[in-house]
Image (cartoon, rainbow, N blue to C red; front, side, top):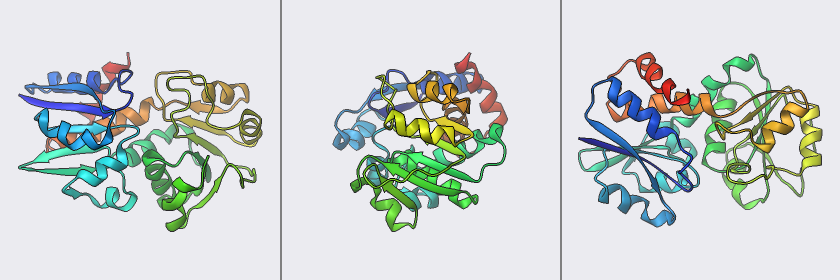
Length: 262
């Protein structure tokens, strides 16, 4: 039997097991997908091998740690230093990043976008910032502290900490932080975030299946908004296919995984 897991902290909210188990069942694969909470990032690699996994997905806050434990990583994951999909091949672990293409596909309902402000500077922010810039958007990254912005500074992104940020107009505002996942926090000072939203058109929160304070504020300011459900779906489809050497039709996987959102 094939065994897969989601690694992160927290993971109790994750519907990745439902998504992947629907796909496994519909495709007639003898396998199971479980949740594994990793509190100590140093235990990620040991846990992968101890559970005898064939593959895993990685969510906050362990995507950069996952990158460092891989034997091989694909081009895009190497470019951003963050991995969200681990695949066992022989005795090695291969790392991939499906967040970026999953997110970009999820933006399609918004139509044409020229500029974006990303809140947060973790692995998800790296993936999103990179894929948006590669598709011609003007991107700025805003994070509470300067220390986590090193990657963005070294790779030529416009970025600011809360202390030196000067508000401008951005069509799309993206929350990549965990604010609102297990609390009622906003990812940014409410007054400042409101000012930004009044100049924006769209808001996207990578947190899914939840009316976060960020999304509530976006709707108060009449922005077209979206949670992370489509991103989760699309990145999950790509990750599932990587578990099986890309041998399945993506539409078939997508059709199965959509059942988890009903």
